[in-house]
Length: 420
Image 1 (cartoon, one colour):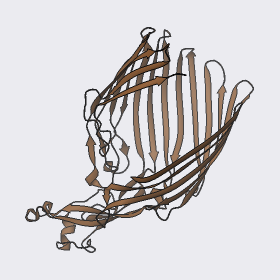
Image 2: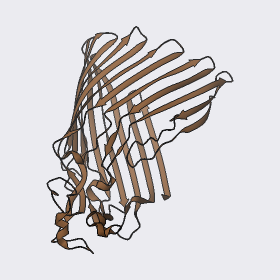
Image 3: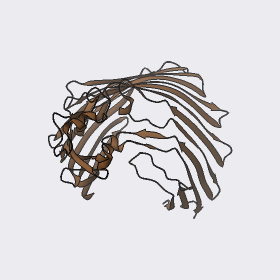
Image 4: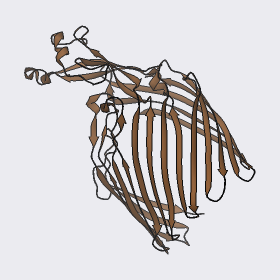
């Protein structure tokens, strides 16, 4: 990435519970997409110039000693000049929200709220409701039952992407006599202006309890359903009747190739010719989380948590979705005694499968890993100076969180903090 310019500005005003905020982000530059080679044989050049201006206002009022009402809204204007989405240039977003926290008594509380948003690329406003019931059988226990619905508008890239990249086929996979020969062919990547918003409905039941004023335990179970999820998927293919340019074999061979995808638009034969974004359908997810965090004494604290996520359940081909880690576990301790302080933690993340980068050539797994981090520090000058050393991935494992993410190795950092 070269020639990057970043400008950020913000203003905040508040008086009692009233707030008025403004911020702006200005970003421009150019970068080479090393994973995507253009038809000229060079990495796709991504030139960008974006400007964002956001105004937000909000307030909180109380009524009758039982209602805490918060309300407000925001207006955001975005302008875009993107080389890979030349037909898109701006987007305006307007939203407003209202929420009422209702305290019926010491044992029962309700939270009711909703937000309405209108995006420039959506035909109608979208409503995002939420409701929660909090039961407190005692001062140190709480049960929460909640439901909410949220949405994501198609991005400018989703709507207006327009570029061509080069795909490759090893001809030796078709005929061993052609081993070593690679055929390059163009593939179009085109946005979809007909996309609708994708939405998420979430239902959660959770419990939080305090044990003898020393430890906090938590547990929750959740279920989500994503509707009209937006996926980058194959929508066209080269066939015998319309082979790719420079195809070196008889066109009928294209009909004998295995399918590049299993969806209705590509169920047999051919080579991929076009990718685009589609609202494919619904995906169900479910899982649970457990946690404990407590003090052994004034100097030592311990924590542990575990989460499980079941395999996603789409109503379309499973090959279209990522398969996130099923199991995650974290445990650790922190201490602070006199001049000395430190922490030690271990995190386990299960294997995962990723398919959200370009075509099937870039689909692949990440291995399960355990990461151990630690830190130790000493305070000086009446606690006004703290010198510490931190270690990340102390066992120096190869850690990769995405199939095309960086491989992280051991890092040792030194830190000096001053208090004035």
